[in-house]
Amino acid sequence: MTIHMRGRAGALAWVLRAAAAALACTALTGLAASPAGDARSGKDIVDAHCASCHAKGVKGAPRIGDKQAWAARASRGLTGLTDSAIKGVREMPPHGGNPGLSNADIERAIIYMVNQSGGQWVEPVNVAKAPGERSGQEVVKEQCSQCHETGKGGAPKIGDRAAWIPRLNHGLDTTVRSAINGHGGMPPRGGKANLTDKEIRNAIIYMFNPAGNSVPAKK
View 1 (cartoon, rainbow, N blue to C red):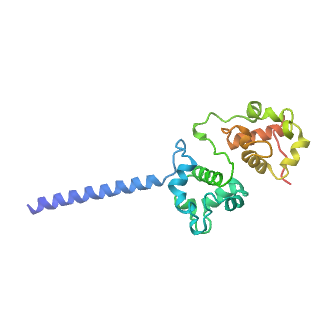
View 2: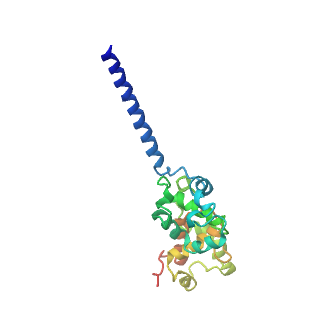
View 3: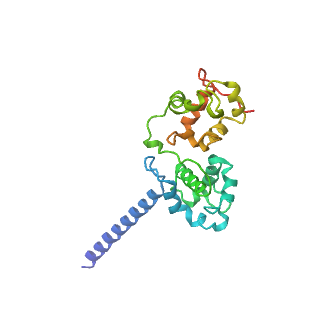
């Protein structure tokens, strides 16, 4: 009888250990980055992970809605803000303390908070579900040529190097960021929200030199 009870106790202990291991595995899986096709909106990410500090400005975090606080940060561009959030800054740990957030999740959260604080940035589309990447020529023909073909509203014409070089003096990345955020009479992402950052880059390179697809080096 004693042997039988010990056997049952041993089996129960094994089941409990297995269950604990399964729960631990599930918890670790939850920390993994979201699948590429599971792009949450910036609002969803902020509500779930960022609002605990950014809703009220806890520990010096810029409060959502504080235009002055976010304007200073937005001037660094999405790349700079994302890099800081990924690495951690001041009292905010890397990835906002949530290793399960992908870099794309962080970008969307930042864009949402900037826009809720006076910005007009465009949230990127879910690239995993988007059609194949369009070439610079395709993007220009489909969207950019509406203004850049004739120079409407002061837009630099396609292939007019003299007009493009001053705009590229600070580097291609700066010009791409300007197009993403909107500049002068051009709305964010050239008025076509489903253009990816890479497609905008392709379009700018093509418009600078349709024949050679090259841009001047940053001065």
